[in-house]
Every structure is written in structure tokens, then in C-alpha cells.
Length: 53
Image (cartoon, rainbow, N blue to C red):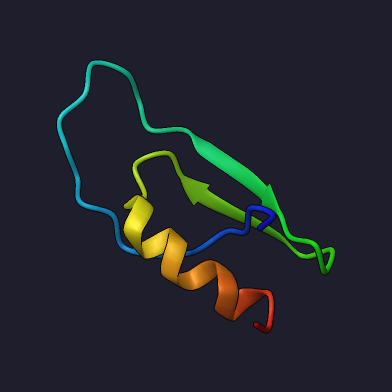
């Protein structure tokens, strides 16, 4: 499965470094920007929806 992206609410955790955005390119050509703090479980559930599976 190719990576996909999600705009989801992530649990905020204190960090020493600022949160950065990750760009995920889907197989269908769509691009998604997500915060690096996005919950992996939320992202895993969303990817198939975004890819139309």
C-alpha cells in the first residue's frame, strides 16, 4: 500500500522541536499535508478512504 495523507486532529504532545508538515503523495496523484504529530492509527484508517478503496 502506498502512503496517503490525512487532515486529522492529532494528540498534541510537548516537544523540544516544532511540529513540521509532511507531504504525502497518493497513488491517484493527490497530495496531502499532515502535521508530523498526526496519529498513525488515524492516518492508517484514512488512507484507504482517500485512495478510493
